Length: 389
Ligand SMILES: Cc1cc2nc3c(=O)[nH]c(=O)nc-3n(C[C@H](O)[C@H](O)[C@H](O)COP(=O)(O)OP(=O)(O)OC[C@H]3O[C@@H](n4cnc5c(N)ncnc54)[C@H](O)[C@@H]3O)c2cc1C
Image (cartoon, rainbow, N blue to C red; front, side, top):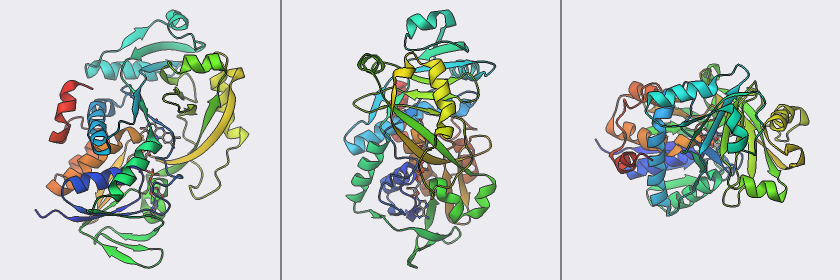
């Protein structure tokens, strides 16, 4: 089969990684991005995003993490730099929430070792924490911080230098025709190709309104902190924390390589408009701060350095939508707040499905975390998979 020409709408991690991967497969690619490239308002633009094996009952996604690491390794080779720092992962749950239990069961089922920690031992092992409400805890050596905005910046620069990829920044797409792989930009320019991938993040329902019944834009607030010096030194060696001991579900990104310490929550707001104002209100932040006060030692001495408001799309079951639509189109919406870690992998595998003509339905199930290893990963990923990264 002759390698197709591809159009990609959206220059976040999904669009850029897919452009890179399609070019690796021999395609010519055009990327259309409404803002600058990368767009600082996109989901992919923040200091960091986490990658971790614990995944609640979503065993299919836990199973894909090794492939995700292998895909990042391949990308580091392309970029000439590794934008990742390992931290290990501390998983906590309590107050009736059973996230850590479900994660532990999934990890046991896929043969991934982790260390259970008795709650009574937590203060000794992790003196940075309070343990109120925690009923179950475990530690796993794997997991860490992907330096997200450095990744999309470096990737955009790398792609701009390739002759087989054209990047069109500040070029909003007004309409897409998924049958003919044809777009019309805001200025009325028409572009067509053999295949099109719509990776428009939280804006996707503006282009494809029928998706609104399945994808809900969700406004999320994260907080960066200035810490007292001693706390900062301690957290520089501290773990990533993912916890569910109540409604909020806090995650903490420890500072690494000069980046900030950040906390956020996994409670979807399911409200807001990505084109709207981005100031955070005290009310939106309060549940997160309340959880910080009850979980983190000395939190009352931490000073908020800055807040960031970001949008992503949420599905009902938190599974990704990567689906063929129309004769020549793909909708690529791996999000629900956990997609970045799979960005390189999603791009590589979608490019293979497009170029090799693999079954689109099988691909959609794989991306939804429903099939584990059903789609054989790219042979290029094999060396890293065998190392068991
Ligand atoms: C606060 C927060 C925390 C998160 N934490 C994690 C985490 O720890 N780990 C993890 O794995 N994931 C995490 N995620 C999720 C992850 O960031 C997203 O899944 C991922 O970045 C989505 O990438 P994307 O390319 O689909 O979307 P985006 O990065 O939003 O890119 C979409 C792009 O499409 C462009 N676009 C939209 N419409 C048009 C149009 N009409 N014409 C042209 N261009 C258009 C937009 O401008 C944008 O640049 C988090 C997300 C948020 C917001």
